[in-house]
Each structure stands twice: as structure tokens, then as C-alpha cells.
Image: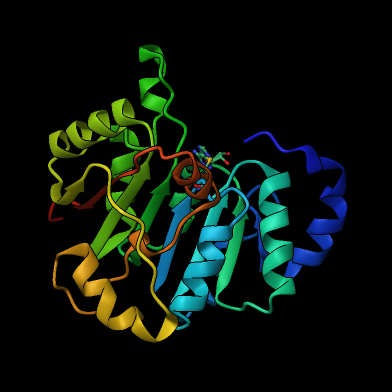
Length: 234
Ligand code: SAH
């Protein structure tokens, strides 16, 4: 994500410090061990609007945003501190480097929102739904954990559906052009079961919260696609 605010980086790093870690500098193993809530991760969180809204809806969960662009994620952390959120954590780095430092089967939910589609065939393995990445998510997700993806890019979406199925995952729900849904914090418990269609108590869904990219696309009338999938049984 290109971001013009990079000159504010030192300021944001300082403001966001309480909820910000850098995979190149910080001991993440230590950080993860101090988390005592169930964990949800957004890979490629950008400015963190999704993470902040989810954290407000589900205060008993810990929401971790990961992004490799320091300027965007530092801003995400600074805004979260400003809003007094304590159940969020932002990590600067690549999911491939961060995942090995997390305990296995500890993550409840992984969100991919408007990930880079990497349209050229030779870059297919960089897509966040490529098999190598799916293996990482399967390693992280708990037994009843799920992966949710949202994107405006239909070609990337169809490719993801195939990649996920080929890797032996089960597709719980595939929805092309789903409507935006809103819930209040009080309704979160009831609504989330309906939305993900699994009927699993305690399930959270990314369908309730619009990301920064999503708001922009929806305002232009661009359809948004959604899927929810479970990893193969370990
Ligand atoms: N989820 C946000 C931003 C989408 S843009 C939204 O919907 O508004 C995609 C983001 O993914 C970019 O900020 C990019 O830096 C990040 N990203 C791409 N590949 C990544 C990787 N392997 N690890 C961490 N972040 C990644």
C-alpha cells in the first residue's frame, strides 16, 4: 500500500509503541506468551480500521494485525492507542517470518482482506492464498479455526477458491457479491452465527466490518466476494 504519511513514521512509532512490535527487532515469542485471550489475525491489515472495529465488537478476543509496510501499520497502532484499545496488537513484518514464532494451533481466525492479487502468473506464489501460505495458516489455526477472505478482485477470488480446495481445505461458505452487514456490539453474539452460516457458537465473521479498501469499493458499487474455509484435519 502506498502511503504518503511516511514522514510521520517516528511520531506514530512512539505513539503506538504499547501495541506495536517489529519482527526484525522485538522478541515476538515473548510477546505472544503474554497474550491470554483467543487470537484472531489479519494478514495485511494496512491502516488497521478493520482490526479496531473488530476489537470493539469482540473485546474478549485479541486481534493481531500484521503488515510489512511500517508507515501504514505504525499509524494503525498510534490510532488504536489514541482510542484506548488494549485487545489489539500490530506487528511489522511478513507473515512468513512471523508465523514460526507463534505457537501452533493457537489462532481462532485468520482474515485476508483485499490482499494484493499479484495478477501475473509468475507471481502466483506470492498470493496470500497460495499453497505455501495456506500451510502456514493451517499450522496456526486451532482445531475449529477458520480462514476468511474478502476481495473485490474476481479473478483472484476464483483462483483462491481453487487453491484452497486443492490444498484439501473445506470451503464452508463462498459468496460472490455479498451485501454489507452492520451489527452493534450487543448483537455480535447472535449475528455472527447467522452470517458465517456454520452455526458454530462463538464464531466471528469479517462480513460485519468493512475495511478501508472495502468502503472505497462499495462506494463505487464494486461487488465484494467472500469465502470462509476450514483447514484439513491435522
Ligand atoms: N486489509 C486492508 C489493506 C489491504 S492492502 C484493507 O482491506 O483495507 C494489502 C496489504 O497487505 C498491504 O498493506 C500490504 O503491505 C500487506 N501485505 C501483503 N503481503 C503481505 C505479507 N506477506 N505479510 C504481511 N503483510 C502483507
